[in-house]
Image 1 (tube, rainbow, N blue to C red):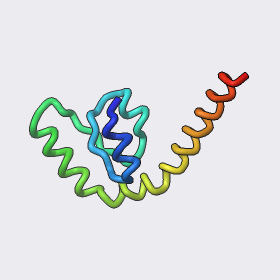
Image 2 (image 1 turned 135 degrees about the horizontal axis):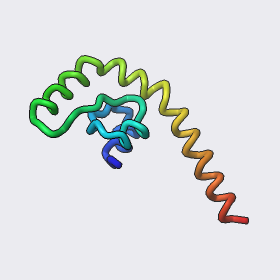
Image 3 (image 1 turned 120 degrees about the vertical axis):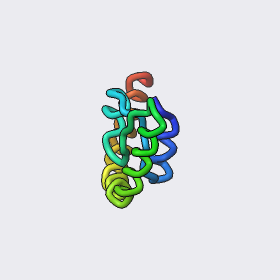
Image 4 (image 1 turned 90 degrees about the vertical axis):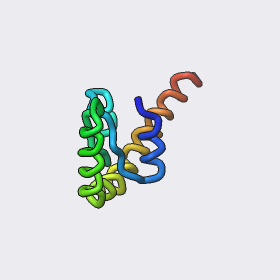
Amino acid sequence: MNCGAYESLAARKPMLLSDTKTIRSYFTFGANYIKSDSLEGVRAGVRSIKSELALRENEITDQLPLMEFAWEEMFAATDAMFMN
């Protein structure tokens, strides 16, 4: 996983992430995905995130509270499991 992506969400900044199944399945909003195997792929990704910046920022604003709530639910369930 990409720790920088968590930091980006915490700062409410759009992300440019490698296009892998794992990353796409976890970071489902606020990101543009790139094939990072070439410089041109990275350049295309930078252009795409710049052109969709407002859209990605809005996704983060809308979706991040839901993700944070899900995390808190998961942590509470984990705590309850180990406290009993």
